[in-house]
Length: 305
Image 1 (tube, rainbow, N blue to C red):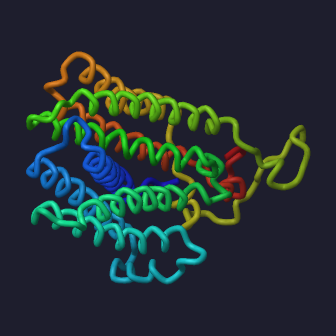
Image 2 (image 1 turned 45 degrees about the vertical axis):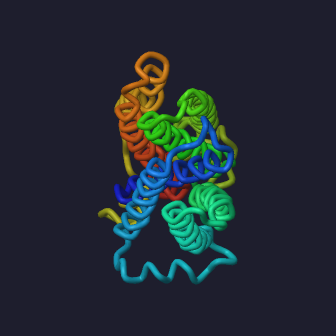
Image 3 (image 1 turned 135 degrees about the horizontal axis):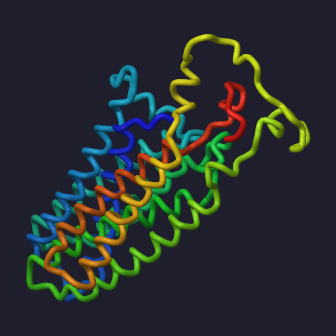
């Protein structure tokens, strides 16, 4: 698939913002580490809100006519994209209510708003991931490991930002560090399982697309066109295997190894770990699209998806 940079940024930025706000709300409810100060709550909430809004705005940039983005609300019963849009609006309203309840204390809405923020953040993350996991023609995405990866990667990147915020005040950061380490391991394991399940070189071939035995020797002689088409431009992105390997190594190093080293050896450099993680996830998400193989490619010269 052709990676759209706006969607790559959207999924990483909004994922980190949703993860941060969900964890912030849960930490507030449980008074994790003795509880964050009012300033830390407001700062963390505004940061998460900004990340989500920046991602949502970026998500409209790949549209031919961004003014038609409102149409994404029209198919709630059948479209994961529509569900994502509806729940994102509800999440924004809940987040604004939660931040207002923190700014003006005491406020009886604080606990209910925190519960709503966490619940809606999880729903939006799942809807975003299911936009891709529901696509049967792209086997790399069509698995429940896709929403699991989105959920864990979003919460892991958000937990690093939350740990950085916790370290700025008098809050005990020990529990936040443990939380980040647990999420790091869980996210790395889920991503490794996702990659192992659907390597690009082991997909179905043109034989299965035509209903022929795998031993049959079939080769497409003519794709029916002499120039690129919308299908070949959007669904036939080519990425050299050696480049994919290099980018994958960069992604793993920045997203997991650097944060792990900082968590264990240099806890004072947590902002750097969070930024490195986000950079690594941008590469990871670019590969998520670039390595995906749509079955339509089998009818345009590809021998395997």
